[in-house]
Image 1 (tube, rainbow, N blue to C red):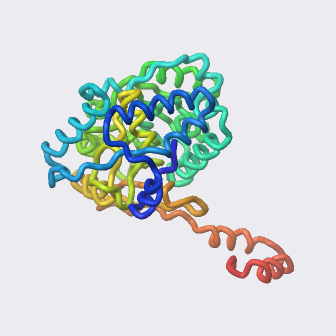
Image 2 (cartoon, rainbow, N blue to C red; image 1 turned 180 degrees about the vertical axis):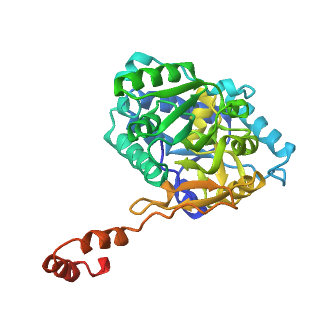
Length: 341
């Protein structure tokens, strides 16, 4: 997936040299280029993604929480995709046996794609504050990379996905890695009837497919235990996204909407915070040291509960290590790396 900028200045810089499309005919011509590039390599496909976009509408209803606003976005989706939206559109069939041997991102054959994905997943995992044995819900588990990593760490994971092939893949990968995973084949709203509760919930590159995100935030209140957290990793929650929330107009999103019928939403930070607050959640943004701000992880919690733990800074971690070293070595480090002290 593309590293989409999280601020409007970055977004403008990112898009200013792109071809701006105005018609579906122009979009279909670009998508034909995408199809041709995909036959070459994953990196070639992503290079084409970065060459085009469409403009956001300036005729939006004023209230982003209104029925009119939602209706506007659904009408735009129908125009771009060629059909009405249904949550079943998020399904995507594939060869489960092949995916078990070589799941995404490895099947792309791109070191760059694998590397970016690993950084994003690592940023999320580094932020999660759950002890071994804690129960966690992986919402929109997909190929199960997040699920497997958390299970191997000792967390008790329930993985949910609307696609039955993904659920079959998760079961096979669990056997391969010798971990126990509960798998649920359902959409996000399964949590409204869930009989169990969890210490945490995780969205990794999945939340932006949820049209009923306000309803989802409300439902999470009933399944997250007191003191529990909701983690959002690698989601298009942008500091100055051009609209409060709605369909993204970058090349990759347009390809996903028109070619695969998926819902590809983006959110402004201010709207995201306000939407969570309406459902009784506060949220903290974690910018991970050493990574771009675009790889921030968002952690939601109930305001009356203790705030989430802050990530230790690199210097403070280094100081802890340095204090355990012999004085002579510490003196050398002090001369070379004064910031550590």
